[in-house]
Image (tube, rainbow, N blue to C red; front, top):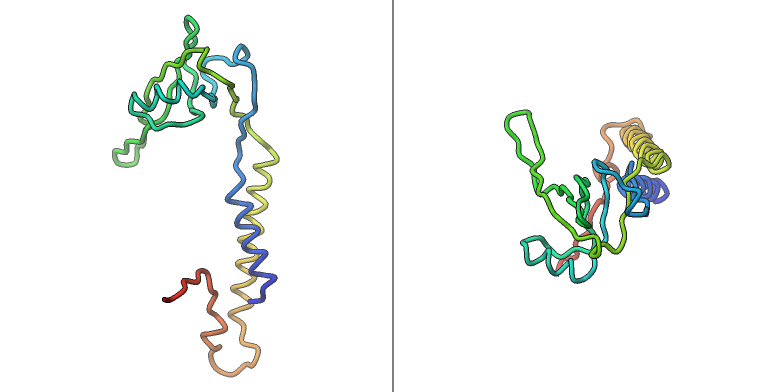
Length: 161
């Protein structure tokens, strides 16, 4: 396989993995309604308080806004999953955050451009992989099996000491 094809596979794979179907858009706190998925940026004081409650220190917390009462936001954040057979459910925790502890809030929205990038990258990567496999399986000399060295693709190189 030539270098150009390897680079193309790497670039398309990276594009497919980096893209997502959603993005967070900054918005005003007053515009967010209960039930919407949000990302809340916290003050350093609020970060320390959350770390003392058992959460790790994070600049932003993602979850679903449950309600707003008396200058307090009630946020449902996922902390794990539970699976029984084929049924899987999220384990959530209610987290209350005082409005003065909120530096900013971002609303989760569908992103058509990121979705197109994800689909295009995955499709292009799969097509390139299929073409590479077909090209590697052909034997140009027409005699016997191809040399195993020609079929090997180096994915990872670890230096030996």
